Length: 321
Length: 257
Image (cartoon, rainbow over all chains, first blue to last red; front, side):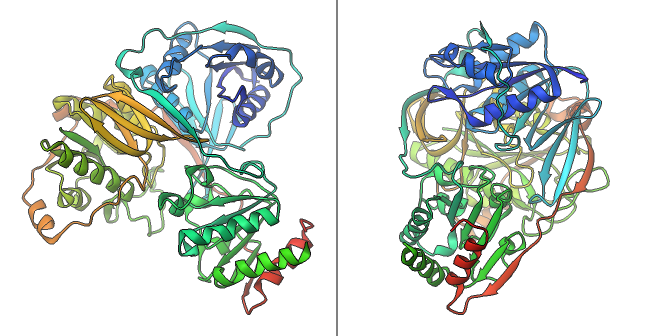
């Protein structure tokens, strides 16, 4: 191994670390001889066992953010730690807060960020892979100059695998007063409840797009998903149109899914959407336009009216019991 | 209330994208205003309108050979435009872009800076927050609604689980999602008026930056570009009333039913 030290930003979600954080820890320990993690929140020390299990030897705890958005205070703490001895690279999950932390940290350390990364290789130095042009080509990139590279990695790029390690040693870390940069505060959090399996974890995902015609027709997608014991998803177009909450969105700015079967209903297949679902094992598409890009990656395509095919599919699934 | 909207002119997304010989995105064709930026322009116009005074300025970086995209923002109602255009900037990364935008914006600090969450061509998605850090300002990303109350901005910010209500003192950088507002179409009157609105084209030296801000300062480089493993298209059938049954048969064949 030529990489000695990697830091991973690990995000707390409901008392444990996010799945993407565990994926990054798992991969980091295969390419670096030492992995440390950075987290925050009211009970960061309670995450030490999980961070250690997945490969971190040290967990830096930024502590309570007192309602501030994580970007500024977490980046300040990482920059302060790096000033005492910087790692080879800092890995950050692609998420709303992860991108904020990456941007802040980049400007603070005057180091570049590489985003939308799906693989990190050791080729005598760190090399990152990025899908471009709708995933038809892969760019390999590297950092130059002194200092750590900041790498923002997409969900599901690596498998989360326990290393069976013991709890990470917790050390507190703080970037001090963030002043004006940390002035944005969360007043209230709203959770948009959903039932059934989680979109990112479901074995079957049924997604709807603009081709459904109107918001009311999204209930067909939900019904089909329920009958298949799957999760309903959506393209950005109908999320932006307000038909369904943002938590349903699959794609570049939404969730990355890799189910056994992905059924795209009335989705044409914009690059934005495809990068979030093309890792699915099997893709089924229903679209009235035979030239729709989604058919280029679908294992099984039906050229037809989603308003006819989807209700018929629901009836067929019901008939099977 | 004065608002700066950062905008980007990009190659038409409907046209196939490719890299040039330096592995930069080929921008030699026609450039248009990134649709993702139209939401910020519209939001800014509505906020200024509500405040009753002030104006909207669009700030951009890139080739000024074609400024139709910026004129489009002016036609929607922005008062003036500034574009930093310099050969030394070809291949600039997100941090370099943020440095250029910051140099322009700090000359006359607005009350609010709006950006898209990410561009539709590069989608790095970090420039707005880098800009906020360089300007020593707070930032709120992924806004799905924005309102201003006195010297405070209130935002509903998307989260993995739903959304957070977030507040920040002004000035602040806010990134808006598509769908935050419905962008207006430029009227004929607006298009005519845009032709005479001020549009400053500045060099790096004009904004007090050295040439190192460009690609030589990027400190990241593309090693190679290779074709990704293709995902082959499979079967395609035209529905003749049997489409649903065919899907059921396919699901059975892969043993999920």
